[in-house]
Image (tube, rainbow, N blue to C red; front, side, top):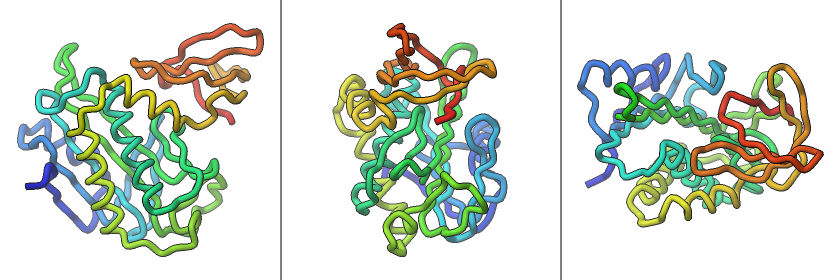
Length: 243
């Protein structure tokens, strides 16, 4: 029996919003997946919109209850998902796949996939997570988004979307079930980290600064080293990429 229970629909505003509504109604089971052929109001990081042409890409969300999911840290789930995406793209021979902190997936510095993880708490206790995934598969026009790309544009191949979906779910399930420790997963995540050991441009409090990316720690903070050799840790949303 599959780990996931899949509900496929033709169109919806946001799969994440739909799953959150179902969670609040108390009707959502661990491992539920909502897959939309057309998502009209997709969500990205920092309240950005995720634009996707109908029937050309993968847009879906997964639901996890943490009493049924063995993770040591909320960021461990980020690692599980990001590495499953990287492995899937490697399987389909997409070139130069990296993970851009926290969980965008790039090919040759262009964005193929965005992941939005919404953690649901009761007080201070993490109860569940909703993972929204938007993977550009066969789309070729991105309306002036120069850093966006797709599996098709990166490879010249037209892909079977269901085949990509099935392989990705299998990779996620494998990462959940296998006995890798969090430290081992984090090491793999850092090995695939975009810009690691490179000088990159960031922005914090409307000020741009250059720093070398050292890696990401178990809390999901990114360690940077400035041009004077001083290191610092940064949370998600504290800083943003300039490039």
